[in-house]
Each structure stands twice: as C-alpha cells, then as structure tokens.
Length: 242
Image (cartoon, rainbow, N blue to C red):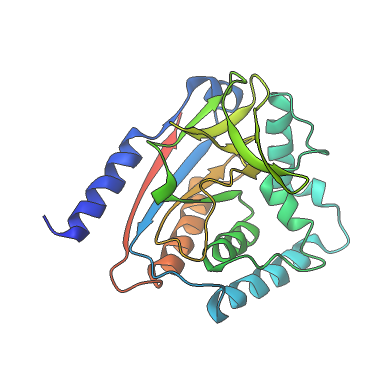
C-alpha cells in the first residue's frame, strides 16, 4: 500500500467512527456537522493567500453588519439559542462565529495559515468552524453532552490547567478528553493547529437557517484553500446529521 493510500484509509476510518450523540440532536434536530480531514499539508506560517482571505472576509462582514446589531444576524441568533438550550449564557461565552464577527471592526486575528483560512471562511459564510491537529487526536471525534468529568487542557493566568465542562454541556471530545468546549466556544491546547501541522481535521457546525447548499459551499471553499497547501494533499469529508 502506498503512503498516500494509507493516509486516506486512516482518515476515512476516523470519519466513519465520528459520532454525534442522540442527546445533541434532541437539543437541535436541525444540527449538521461537516467533517473534513486533510493530510499531506506542507506546513507554514500565515502567508499572502491567507491574508487576502482574511481581508476579503473582513470587508464582507463589515458590509453585512453595517450599523446593525451582530446579535440580530440570523445565524448568530440561532447559535445563541442553541447555547441557551444546554444552559450556557451566550452573552458571557460567545460561540466562535459571534466572537469573530465582534473582532471584525478592529481586524480579525492573524494566527497561522490554517487557522487564518478557516477563520476567514467562518466569517464569510457565517458558520462556526473548528480546526484540529489530526496527529494529536486520540481516536475519533465525538459530539456529546458532557458528564462533567472529562478533562479539558487550557491556560489560566499564564499557567497550564485542566478544567472540566459543566454537566450537560455540549462538547467535542476524543478518547483523551475534550477538544472543544460548548460546541464551538474554546478549543483545547492539545489539538490546536500549529505552524508545523501537516494533517488537520476541520469541523463545520451548521444550524438553520443555514441550508445544506450553503454548508456545502463553505466546505468546498475550505477544501479548495487547503488543497493548495501541498503537492500530495489527501482530503476526505463526511456529513453527519440526525
């Protein structure tokens, strides 16, 4: 078996094993998760292409927001409602799409090439997107209602700490612990994308009013962008729905 085929087999198995718990769909039957794995990335820092995507995203978002309230954007409001459904306070812990939109006025963050790409697509298509270093994953991704015992590695006051989600909180996790708290609020340090990342998992979280067609367009733009990041990139995807 060629290395190319081996990578594809492993990515496909991870996607097959990925799961969204029925308790999550009970909260939001309209939820869909588009999972995209990318192998064979040539690592690197932010570059001209990722910068151009961020600038374009900032321009479109400023035009959309205008003098209006970010809270009134239908996609933002839908995720706020989802947060309330599992007990989170969206005004205190904002979902990732809202957090990015609130930074547009001053400029979106510049982090690294992979993160810049998915943040730009998140803002352009009004969808929360998470990016994970696939090589640091332990098992397949699962979206569950937490028991409260799952470990989540993060930082507090400049120190490494292990926190735990609230019971009933919606979290992405793998066999080693939580990879993202409150659906798409804060990612763990363990699986964060880095400048030396060569394989990645992207999770696109969709709720109504986003249609399947709009979700597909966001996913296709991401695939095209990361597909240019290496000479032998292998990309697989899976849509999970109720």
